[in-house]
Amino acid sequence: MAVTFDAGTAAKGGRLRVGILTTETPHHVRFVQAIAARHDVVRVFEERREISADFETHHPFEDERAVFERATWFDGADPGLSDVAEVETHRDLNDPKAVASMKAAGLDALLVFGTGRLNQNVIDVAPERIVNLHGANPEKYRGLDTHLWAVYHGDFRGLVTTLHRVAPELDRGGVVMRMPIPIHRGMKLHQLRKANTDVCIDISLQGLEMLANYGQFISQPQLYIGRYYSFMPAVLKSRCVRQFEAFTAAL
Image 1 (cartoon, rainbow, N blue to C red):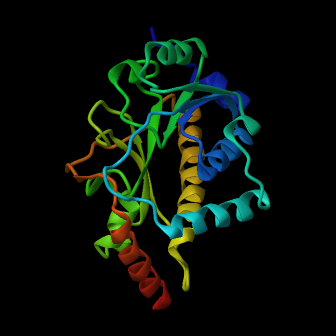
Image 2 (cartoon, rainbow, N blue to C red):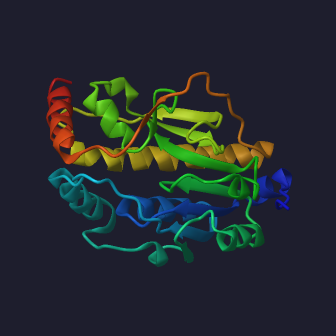
């Protein structure tokens, strides 16, 4: 049985009881930290599902990205999720034990950021109150590395972030809001994820305000089914670095 939610009570208190479904990376730690500053992050449900490609995906710009993010957000430190919130770890968040824990937590909302596909049992914990953060427009790009695929295709207008409802079909839930990622002259590709995370924080806080006021995430159905993308090979990421920097140099 899904937990009940009183929008009026939540709005009066200003703070919602939030659960965050995510994985441990610097940008996810920052996201949890920022949401916890405004709402009660009751628990982070960390996923450690192992997924990998059968080709090389790691690129040096990703090492630069990690250094840049830690320097920008944490003064060079390397905090974990457990440093900013209570964490419960599962290999797969679709596991019945994880689902039972989400139900028992009495959450007003579930925010999903960077996990694998979630099944109907997870959605049923709070069907009207679970949303996902997706890089790019899911009506054009679904799946993995979506911002990078937009850059690869030279689709710089596609550098947006979307907050959408979670549905059993991957990245197909109704869109709550979409916001462009600010790109500035001379910006490097290793800075893109930080800018995206800032947008993720912004639209999540706006979405939670919507939930507090109206008792649900108001959304519009997607009209198109975007192409599904998987891991981007490392060799293609080199092209992304070049194309992104050429684009920002001309701004």
